[in-house]
Image 1 (tube, helix red, strand yellow):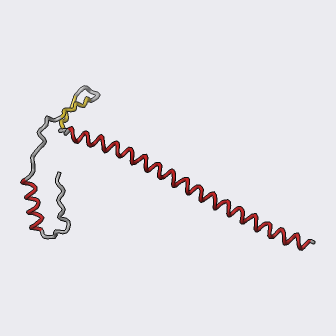
Image 2 (cartoon, one colour):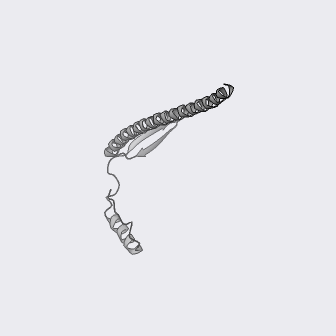
Image 3 (cartoon, helix red, strand yellow):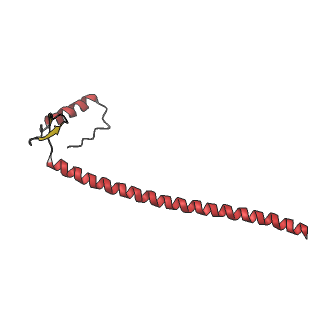
Length: 117
């Protein structure tokens, strides 16, 4: 695979020339034998499907799966930490509101007690 950066080219002729140049470098189909997979139906008939599998591709796919699992784990850890922080902040907010309500109630009760004395 070759990455070609022609993002800033708007000249259609230059783009077509680059496409033709890259077509000329095409190595063709993968030379390995295809993998034959036999799928059996309930009735007993079988369909045969053929696909080419590059061993390097399979190795890369395994590595990508491992990376994906690690990313999912990291995402879960980050979400859990964010949840803990939000829970802490909500707890502090509830405590402040409850304290403020008690304080206001004491102020009103103190004024009523002073009025009675």
